[in-house]
Image 1 (cartoon, rainbow, N blue to C red):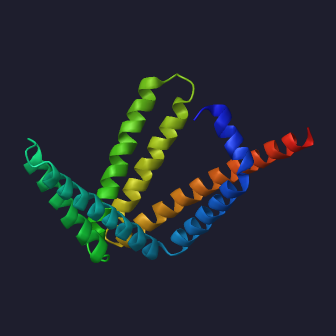
Image 2 (tube, rainbow, N blue to C red):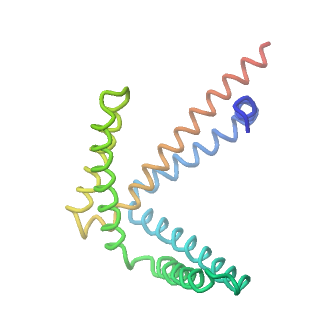
Image 3 (cartoon, rainbow, N blue to C red):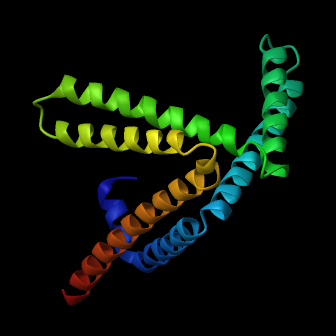
Length: 187
């Protein structure tokens, strides 16, 4: 879709963008207010995604049994089914492992972004990359230091924050679309 078509779509459907933004903001607030529930919902949703992907991979493997990657795809598909089933049907188990993975992910991301910031310095915007890296590092360390307690809040809080940012971005996009719609209507 070209830029002009995208702008026109947002201008015409700004109300839908606003509704989506408000829904995401409410979901984000709920996930932040109830981080354990947000963690369980996110973990269960991830489990279902893995489970569905695994089933599709297994079915696909049997649809092309002569393919050289048959055994690999079958094994990976079964691994996805097992991991997805575990995440989806046992929502309270594995929260500590998930928190450890999140801590390691954020710490590694933070280190890499800080290094990258100094590599691109003095290019405009390098400071924002540095700030992002330091924030990721801080979040990772916060999760790691609070283990095992962080297992019940980390994922839900992060999902909530992400939903809030996504929601506000849709709200601002919708408001810009509304202004464009009103301007076009006055012409």
